[in-house]
Length: 240
Image 1: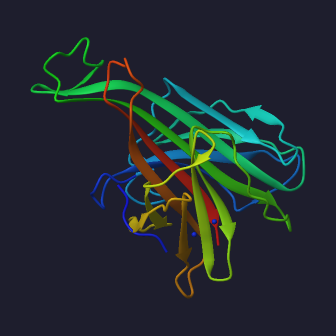
Image 2: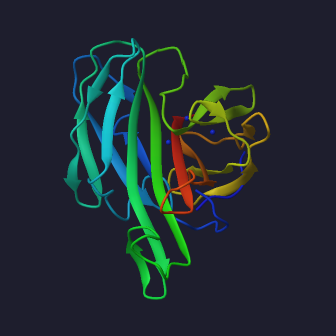
């Protein structure tokens, strides 16, 4: 899914894996006006190949004040779509978390359930996806902050691009595989986060518009779990 890093919502080793993201339908929000919100899965930002499944999915918006509005997405072709009406001016965040449950790789293929129900499994894992999109009203100040997710990227604009900090349960996370995908382009692997959870990306000269920074990594499951790893993926949508 992901590969190098170089910035304005995962990587086990392949550069062409699919990823999931959330994004506003319009680049600028307007207070009191309903805005379309889209969730997609694909190999490049803006081109959804399948709508995320609804079981285990939570979608909401965070206003500048921190007020949370639950969103109710519905399938719309190859997307999930919802509406969000901002009540405040400023920087908003669109968020989703998706617990995809526990699955196992067996001689018969990928099946639901862990090692307790699949004794022939060669691998068992729990999939957790998260995504955040930054969207603002006109002339709003860019104010990045953590959304309190299990796995997320926090951006900081720099002179040449962006530096992201990867958090796992609120703490800087080393070793996350990071990539970037600009609208209509497949992801490019950037590298892995350092001991401080950070990675910097220089935006290519002349690049404009939306892009996502992606991160992923497997983390050993808690002792006694019926699976081996928690496989985390996250996407951060920004507009340059």
